[in-house]
Amino acid sequence: MTPEALMQLAIDAAQAGIASGQSPFGCAIAVGDRVLACERNAVLETVDITAHAEINAIRTACRNRGDIFLSGAIVATTCEPCPMCMAALHWARVDTVYYGASIADATGGGFNELTLSAADVVRLGKSPVRLVSGILAEDCRRLFDLWKQTPGTKAY
Amino acid sequence: MTPEALMQLAIDAAQAGIASGQSPFGCAIAVGDRVLACERNAVLETVDITAHAEINAIRTACRNRGDIFLSGAIVATTCEPCPMCMAALHWARVDTVYYGASIADATGGGFNELTLSAADVVRLGKSPVRLVSGILAEDCRRLFDLWKQTPGTKAY
Image (cartoon, rainbow over all chains, first blue to last red; front, side, top):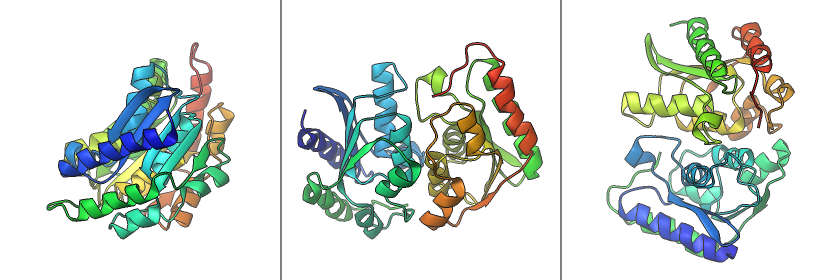
């Protein structure tokens, strides 16, 4: 499973979320060729402010693996993880996190982001998680455009 | 509801968690005199690495209030929130977070903490959430001693 193939699954999940009125974020997790989770943001739908795509994907992956640790896993997330999600990925001990759009893109969409990058959380927190930006970045950024054109969506 | 009274509920929840083999963390959330949530860490029990006491309490409080925002809420958590939990509290737009023990106490217990304080997440992230340390701190630190004396517990 390449990072790009995994990211395409995350993009597909985000698009399905947008189509059902949710926020434009998706995340997929794999170990080798086995996809452990592919989830989207579900904050509005589940009335749960913690239900970001990455948190949902980590929870599903833990359940599917039967383990609180996701060692050896790679993660593809359509947007740079916020500090909540980046720290959760650290706790889960994933190997590498690939992301597409940036927190700046999410802020531009109206989301109330902390001004703390995923790279800063990793660096200041001394996390061993590897972080790689720019995977299918243009496709990931386009999710925000698609979302803005969808009636009834809202940022938070 | 005073911060100390709310913290006592969080301590009680943490003690119940320790008694059932879970990690020594509790968190309670209130608006005025109404307690919206009182939860403990459930990572091992639910096989969910994101199930910290604060995340569980935020999810319960959102559900009980029927709102993704917890504006006007005060939070008492037995240990300084990790970056995942501090960022989640920012997203939830709570008013004030009171904590007892420090991340250093949790690291001393063997937990794989990021070296990034809650105060740093607030400051660097430019969050409006108010953070107050040292509430029933000695009682909160004692939770780690109680936990270490309990057979079969494990850090992660």
